[in-house]
Image 1 (cartoon, rainbow, N blue to C red):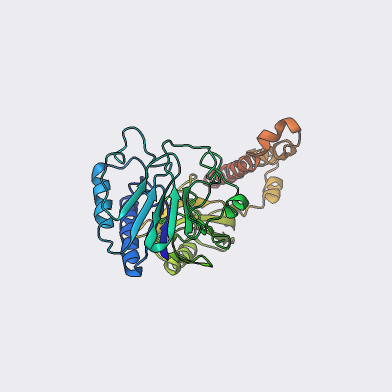
Image 2 (tube, rainbow, N blue to C red; image 1 turned 120 degrees about the vertical axis):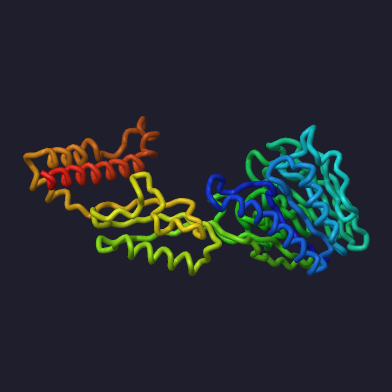
Length: 379
């Protein structure tokens, strides 16, 4: 028996709201979903399992009709799906009254349901969400009948607020395959038959890495699982360590080359570290705006952080300006009292923000000294 297992398509989401490419990303969620169904038809899979969060929020009636039309194209595959925490079945949910095409089995109940496919000698179990949170354990052991069947659990959860589970207990429950959803990062440990393919597309900026779906071939004796990367884009963090000799033009060329190599379809979070020439500024301002060279419409720079330190010799500057405002300013911002780490137990809460405060102080030292030096040079 062959199945395709997808999770968390989140149709209707608008990733990266406020950015020029957000609409294209929203469209990509639908396009990738349609392509997976086409691949399912190509594979002539027996089952398509959708492990929750088909929609990012309560589906509109027209959206259900669009999805149903796509399902109706499947000539061999039966679709089995559940609602997740994002598209949970509320009192007014359009899920309640919607009539699906014959290919679709939708487990609407809060209680565990099952359906048997005699021609496949397979029984699938599952239950939907009826609220945004559900702290009841993912699965409570029940007899798996008939004994000669392949038994599959379709489930959505895995954290404290969303149907937590003990992996070892779940692995010993007797299922041949556990089709999970909810956690967006793919879990590549398929050895125990508990499979989480991750979200079909990355939805949030921290959904790093490849995204896709699973094709599994299952018999009573063995399960073969193949993960298929399929998303149209990735969120990719990139760090560039600069040197005092690095100019803005050289850095921009380096970044653009890296983006071209990884693909301009992807979305990037860029961070600069290291030490730079104090006269060089890579972003537009203190807040870290995206440089003009990276602002072309075809580039998707979600975040640009300049965390570099100026290559000032503050000790020399302090000596050279011991009797003026520049020296006093440097002394104030580099004093033992200002730089002392938090060690008292009562200040441990403040210790968590110390690194951020030191970064702010470093910026203040840099910009303050630069402003004072610029003023002195103009006199």
